[in-house]
Structures are given as structure tokens and as C-alpha cells.
Image 1: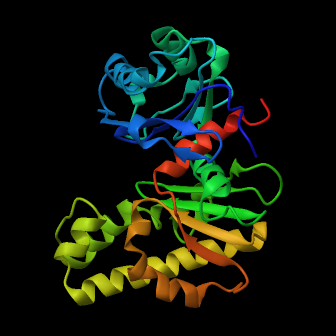
Image 2: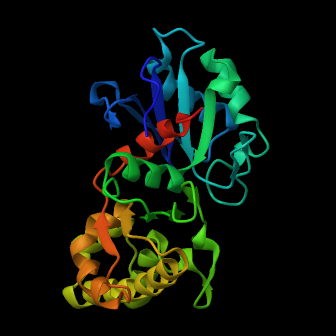
Length: 289
């Protein structure tokens, strides 16, 4: 898989509270670190404030290049109409003010770029594309990927091109998978067991009593194992790559998870690229364009 090295490529990752952007080396599929821009975004502010933050994150990478040559791939969380570039965020506690806005047109206008030079991609799909190009799945043909964080992302290339498969919305226990395999499950479960609140999984690790911490991570591994077994059975991958912030707690859930995964032929790997995977994966959508 090769990008057209005669043109500059920018990968952009839009998260729930930040934007990250960078130039991508089209020969090695790596982020050019000195170009990296990261800044916080206030996801509950007005559409104007949010869009201005996104423009400010991308503009330094656009300046200095001919407008007609710049190619940008943007990894965007859902709900979003990726084909038309229309924001569909509604009732998700982030970016609701953007609902119905043509994000592609707005960025094209503010960045002085042709609209056709901006492409959107689901963030979970971008993660897997990055890991396939230059990360933990670069040595195999068939892989699935999940991102564990504020939400639950899932993508696969086992039946064709890499794509988001949105398994977070599938029925799971009493609700859907994301309610049991995400940061909010950790926070909810900790409160149920202790009556106390924590802001994130990192804080939970720092303050939880050992027995509470072990119980929570054992339950999480059980939930994740059930989810992964179904995902593997449906897709038949060679490798599963796990990313997202919760993947940083690898040592706390991986020993039990390995025991629970039924198909021992599938290699389970921690992301090698972390946040860079989505940046590279977003740029990779220009392959064969």
C-alpha cells in the first residue's frame, strides 16, 4: 500500500475533547513528529467555537503548501455521515451543536482547500488502517481492531477493505456492548462497589483498594472476552489489535483475557502506534484515489 509521495498528506484525529493533526511520511507510514499539532476542544460549546478549534489545529499544517495539492484525511467519531461530511452528533454529550452542519464545506472554506481534498473516515476504521499499514497488524492480511476508551470502537478488514463494524451497538448482557466495555463502565462499577467517584480509569488504579481493583478488572476481562470471542468467530482474523486509553492498563486485564479467548490461533496484540494509528490510517484513505 503506497501513497502518492509527490503530494503532501495530513492525517487528522478528532476525539471527544481534542484534535490532533500531523503530516504523514508517505513512504514509511509514520507521523512526522515535528509537524504534530494537538490541542483541546470544548465539545459542548457552540458550533462556531468547535469549528474554529478544528481549523486552528489543521491550519499550521496547510500553510505553505499549494491549496490544490493538499490532501487531508480526518478520523471522526460517530455518528457522522462520512460520505457527505455531515455531522449527526445528537444526544451524545459531544459536538451536539454541529448537528446537520456540512463539516467538509466549512473546513474547505476556512482552510481554503478544495472540498474534494478532504475525506472523512470513522475513527475505529482509521485506527485499524494505521495498524495494518505500519503497526501491530502490518505482518498479516486479516485483522480486527478495537479501541477501548470513552466509547468502544471496532473495525475489520477480514471481508474486504477495512471498515467500521460498530459492534459497540450490539445487544450485550442487559444493554449494549459499549455499556460494559468502556470507561464509563469502570466509573459506574467503581461507584457501585465503593460509593465513591473517580474521573477516569487511571485515577481508579491509583485510589482503589487492591481487592476492588482486581474485582473490577476481572469483570472487565470477562465482558471483553465474551465480546472478543463473538467478534473473532464472525470475522476469522489472524490478529486482534487493541488500542485506546484502557489498553494502557494491559497488565491488569490481559492475563485473564488470554485464558478466556477461545480461538488460540488468533494473536492478540497491544497497539504499537497508539494515537498515531488514526492519523496514519486517515491519511491512508487516499490510497488508490
